[in-house]
Amino acid sequence: MKQITVLVRNEIGVAAQVTSILAERGVNIEAFEIEGIEDRGVLVLTVDKYDEALRALRDHGFHAITQDTLLVRLEDKPGALARIAVRLKDAGLDLRSMHIIRREAGVTLASLVTSDQARAAEVLRDVLTVEVSK
Image 1 (cartoon, rainbow, N blue to C red):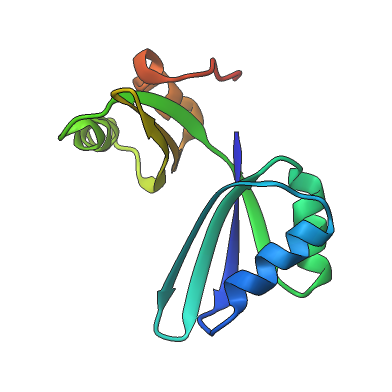
Image 2: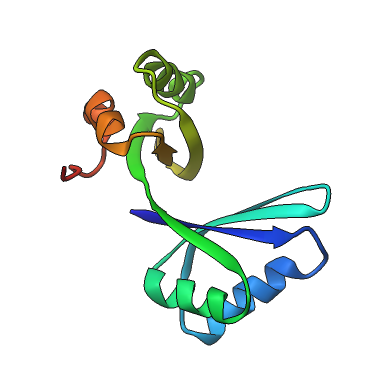
């Protein structure tokens, strides 16, 4: 799975602008998060057409990058995300981002990006949803 990170100005209408650009190109947004701190913002999203989404955003002047993510399946209960974060810390891996994708029927599906995805896949092999190729 891949995620797209877009650096934006924290201003009214930026979410409307980005989502409209993607809609015009026929890109379906599967997950969307936006955070603003002072005058800066960060959008993190997953989509069905990554290459088209990146082209569309760059064509409109947005700085967008894409990263491979690991998908993990966890029990939906207190401490599940903490256990993952601790396992990564104990392996000396930096957890750069973690996003809850879906919660249903007692299961949480989350995507994460670390400083070393191959090592993280080994550390988290028991909770990965998809086998990661090396």
